Length: 227
Image 1 (cartoon, rainbow, N blue to C red):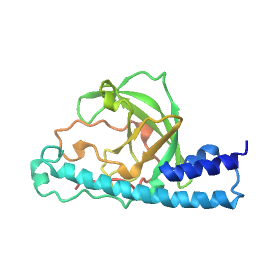
Image 2 (cartoon, rainbow, N blue to C red):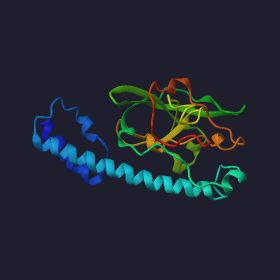
Image 3 (tube, rainbow, N blue to C red):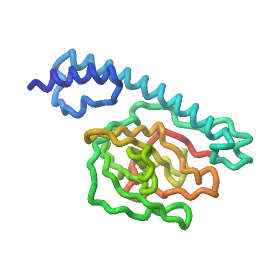
Image 4 (cartoon, rainbow, N blue to C red):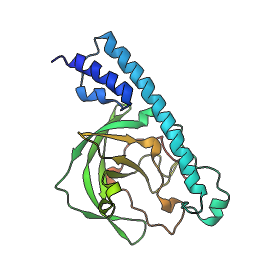
């Protein structure tokens, strides 16, 4: 069957449901056909707008949580003068569609935290992706306690370090979340990368990103350091 035709049909479906970069799954070797190129360009434009819109809403909601005494991780002193978190500009290139390789044989382990507490996690898989032509990978985890709660059954936790640590971003690394989907693709949106709560308040105990999740690149996306 003609893969080009399949991809064009899929792109039309993707444009309608706004799922990022699924055309890569077809691994087209050439872009000979104008209709495919036009569809891809339109799709990328729509996708960029979706990323921007979704992240604007996310940032508004996050600021509301930080300002609310019932949900804020801030100290009372910081909360009273809180106006907004600060972020890198939203950039769709940091919303990546990774290829996920499952690691079902990995046993649960104790992840180090910012305190003496050890957190129970298991490695769910390894996500590989590309940013600016650089091939990268991150270990993806599941929290063993959250797995007992039905609404968190698809929740994935990705702690990471990158070259912005200690400069623009929190020295202890940041987190990003993802959701299990069918197939071997995983959307990771670094525009939603957030700080551990211990970056705001020392009363929290936060997982420390494993050294395997040290990215040799600057992730100029997501939240900046607080102070």
